[in-house]
Amino acid sequence: MAEDTGLTTGIAHHGAARLPSVEIDSFNIELKDDEGFLGDRASKGAFRKILDRWRKPLRKSEEDPFGDEPSDQISKKKLDELLVGEDTEASAVVHSAIEEFAQELAYVTRRFLGTKAWARTERIVVGGGFRDSRLGELAIARTDIILKSEDFKVDLVPIRFHPDDAGLIGTLHLAPSWIFEAHDGVLAVDIGGTNIRCGIVETRWKKAPDLSKAAVWKSELWRHADDEPTREGAVKRLVKMLKDLIAAAGKDNLRLAPFIGISCPGVINEDGSIEKGAQNLPGNWESSKFNLPASLVDAIPQIGDHDTAIVMHNDGVAQGLAEVPFMQDVSRWGVLTIGTGLGNARYTNRKKDNGKDEKKSEKKDQADEGEKGEKKAKKAKKADA
Image 1 (cartoon, rainbow, N blue to C red):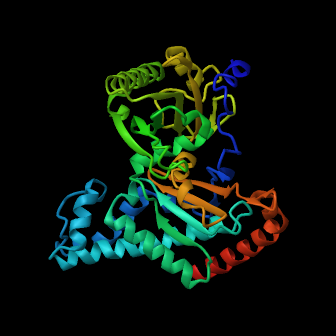
Image 2: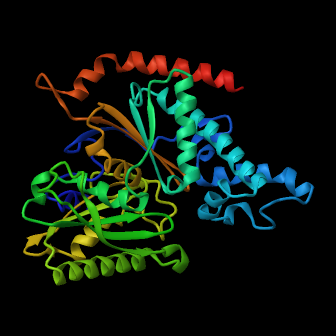
Image 3: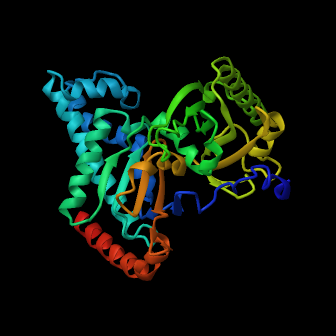
């Protein structure tokens, strides 16, 4: 199967390091320190634990403004309201949690910047579900200030698109631009440990060839964690969602390109199999006998009058790719996605510099810069201690 499925896309390998607009220098790095994986210190769950710690002193005096509601069940909307509400004590608790989380995120970011792959990073986009809140935006802004105060030459900015849309829009950058000609939209899939989201992304390619005006035209969400399906059941439901979207496009005379872009957790091999990191998906997606792109091609062999082409990549990579049109003023940039874990990817734009890719000019001093970054990260770590 591996030899055949590598050819099912017809346009690119899955999980490729070289894409039309960028080189992917690294993704899904799992850094550790004495306390375990660094991603666990800057995840959605980490923030909730920090919030809970700040509530403890108030619980002892029976003055907890949040009452008996568990910290992990308080909605982001409610926390946002408390930030600016009249209950100053509740607002202070949330602000305190934001500050501590920002310190943790700054520590984790320093460690990334200290690796060779992330050397000379100029901007980091922060996405994931945590970003979709005022408290998330404040945490990102505070982290940016902390890093700048320590002389790190990097900007931290929230992802522009809604995180749910970014995972779909980013898959457009997995395909060469010629595939968008004469078509209005593209099918996209964003697979997560809790949800599977399918959508049609309107490329608006004629208005903006850099895809900066791309938008989700229609989408469907399935919370598979509630249904606990088998792997085969999940694929069957995914196929139905895609076919429903194809039918909806037909009714509205929206011309679909013969392409499906897939965002999926884990390390994606070039044949479309998943090497590791898919443990939260329903069933065993890392089996050598399972290949999602091949399964979808079997179920949807054609879109319109053309053979279906599919490209799948890591979900953190895909979400970051939505920012490609807005990163053209820098050469090297990365993404951190704060959700159940901490997704990460680092890119180098494929700009031409005297006939040479930007990537080639970077290699000359990348090792030196990586060493400098490591020293700076160690120095900051000592300061934290």
